[in-house]
Image 1 (cartoon, one colour):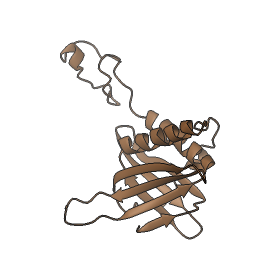
Image 2 (image 1 turned 90 degrees about the vertical axis):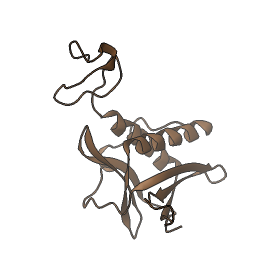
Image 3 (image 1 turned 60 degrees about the horizontal axis):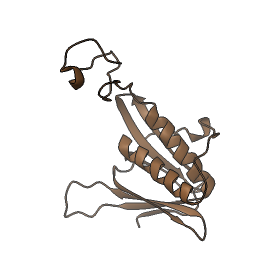
Length: 168
């Protein structure tokens, strides 16, 4: 393990930019370090979903009343590497949630770095809820094809064969 956060005081996800052109980051902070990792939107959504599923197995669910401002990313925004893989688990004995991140490397001969984040139930609840909320802030979806509609309203809907009015 290249980086380990056994008892972080803060774990959050967020984004920079506008819907359709966002950069997603996972930020973890302990008493010594504050580190950011670059993720894709689908990875943020998957992380939130997996945490929610694990919470459900413990008869719990994501938070419904978390402080959005407390979950905001802190500048400077300098991710140390792009995440290629995300694994999530829970230790039922200690009720600690574990997130393992592996670096995306373009060359199969090079071994990527890894990071492990261990968090308590409250942190997992807030992270699951916050991840779902920020993923949902994306572009509006077409009601016919479910593809995103651009901010200016541009959209060629396959359901109308590219013809007809905007389908939002």
